Image 1 (tube, one colour):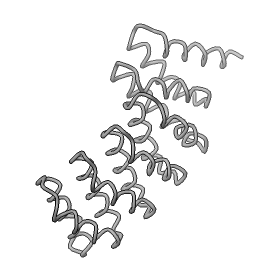
Image 2 (cartoon, one colour):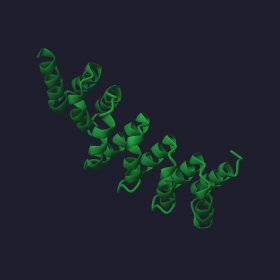
Image 3 (spheres, rainbow, N blue to C red):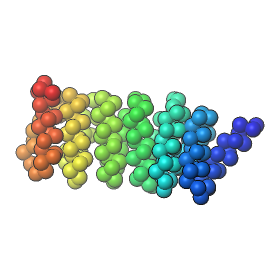
Image 4 (spheres, one colour):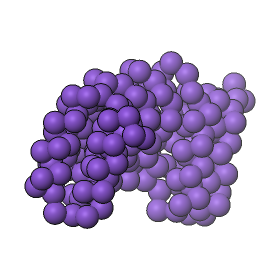
Length: 193
């Protein structure tokens, strides 16, 4: 019973304390306790105005790894705050949970460029070829850093289907950093790593 009260007190501090240090300590303590009921509160803390609180929430969520964490995070990927969505994408990427691949593929279509870029990087790290076609689509993204991340990810995945799309994009790409990344990806695909 006292454990439940302690968790409730920590969640209350995390959500309502005006002191950022106290909120960060509460987030950290929730991770150490390891109770899954803290996941929702920690996800909300990903939008805290204080960096230390957000960082503590991320670390605590990583400590709460179990079969339900990816599931809970995937449900929160529709959160209104793009910083929360980006943090969720980054945690899902670190978890390397195959259950998260489809959610990350959906996140490459997010309205926020930082969420899209994080999702692309996560898919590359997970190495799932299912991501190749959505990543090819991101070669046409309006943001040059998203296009750059997509080219890099396609090179890292090593799927030859990407070669034609990368070659085609190279011909129309005007941004030097994207062109460079496409050339690196094509070299990797050709075995020149």
